[in-house]
Amino acid sequence: MILLWLSLLVLFLDRVTKLAVVSKMAEGESFPVFENIFHVTYVLNPGAAFGMLPHNRAFFLVIGVAAVAVIWWMRKDILAEGWRIRSGTALFLGGTLGNLWDRIQTGLVIDFFDFRIWPVFNVADIAICAGVGLILWGMVQNGFLDN
Image (cartoon, rainbow, N blue to C red; front, top):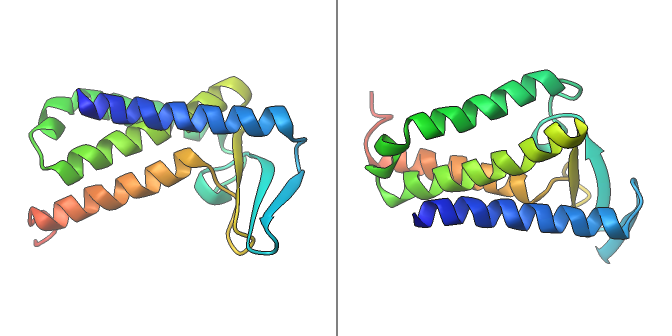
């Protein structure tokens, strides 16, 4: 049950931060938090995390829905795994749902964290990357990648 709450927390944080940016900024507007290091920049992203593969809305909708469906289908197996895989899956699910929400609503994903040397991203992207990292770490710990 705590994993469901972790997924929902990620989704909540993603939605709240995106809504805050949309309500306070115009698209393309940038606010320096630390000049030339970190800005909050409102961008509408037509691609995947960090702007990869732009203008593939249908593809990302299908992938997002499929990822959620696979997690649901494998939930008993996932819950039997160690904390890294369980937590990683929860983070991945929350992030996927956050970006999927945007894609369903507008076809674009709201991004705003801008470190100037990296594509602009959001809370969901962080959760997805952290989730994949934890899942891979868990797989290595379990010897899954030894073959």
